[in-house]
Amino acid sequence: MILGIESSCDDSSVALMDAQTYELKFYKKITQEAEHSKFGGVVPELAARLHTAALPNLIEEISPYFKDIQAVGVTNEPGLSVSLIGGVSVAKSLCVALGVPLIGVNHLIGHIYSLFLDRQITLPLGVLLVSGGHTMVLNIGENGIIKVIATTSDDSFGESFDKVAKMMNLGYPGGAIIEKLAQNGDAKRFKFTVPLKHDKRIEYSFSGLKNQVRVEIEKLGELSEADKSDIAVSFQNSAIEHILDKLEKIFGEYKFKNFGVVGGASANLLLRSKLQILCDKFGSNLMYAPLKYCSDNAAMIARVATSKYQNSKFTQVGELAIKPRVNLDGMSV
Ligand code: KG4
Ligand code: ZN
Image (cartoon, rainbow, N blue to C red; front, side):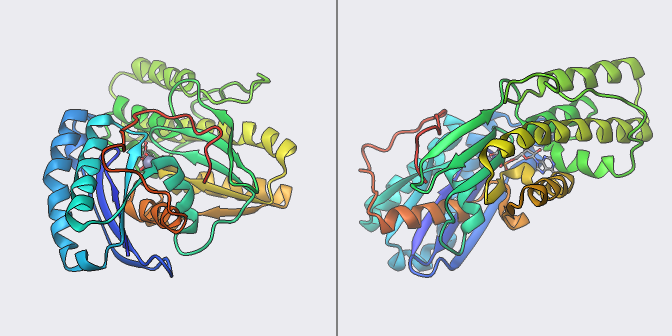
């Protein structure tokens, strides 16, 4: 079995995967959302402290499987350094104690593999990665090499939901809260423009949209429940139309046969339904991960580690470094 450990942001998670069949033998996640909620976002020092408390308990739970573990995979990039260090330290100690090899895993490649938890990866593949930290469109070639086609120049898609929720004192994370509120909203009341609509650049930007929302909230002063729902629906529509507007141009050029949407915000049902329409138009097969594995989790990390184990891609315990930021362009899956 391969052990996967994830602690790049505000979730501590471990998973055990059968290295031959990809079957998940154990999976658990301890999320810190409730603790960060009152601050409207992740507080790094608090996240680090909570990982330090949660990870030893998770490792204790898998101790009956210690004798079956053949390698330990851990997220070492990208993420909050104070969070990454928790998982990486535990992984290194376990490798030394159990005498098994260590495997460093890129968190974003983990999200890509959330589409293929129990099977071989399909290539070539187009990917929309929408999370709290990233908004990217990728083209992964037959050879597994990643090309970054589009990225965001400021906030990420998920982060913009979090910030809009924070402006209305709705808690963290904002994505699911905004999506739910939007169901009761009047989409005609507020007209938020779609970012970069008449701009030829193939990139994303959510800070202007966020500021349009801020101006409306300041004008309204005290917000009623109806105000919140009306803002949520118009904001969500503009943010998703922005994603689709640029994607349509990208599809025109890349004509993806297979297209996957991954990351925490891929749980958004309106986004999924709009992507389905786009994929149908271009004859593309749309893939998404089970809802449980859209947000951060160790199952996807164990899955990447299993592939790397099969290809003997190990890292020396003394050499595995933490990298808060990485450029995916040119990396391979
Ligand atoms: O992948 P993830 O769990 O963590 C990162 O790696 O960032 O993604 C979390 C992000 C948060 O910003 C959250 O608000 C967003 O995903 N999110 C959503 C939805 N569910 C989660 N955004 C929009 N609609 C949703 N239903
Ligand atoms: Zn993530």
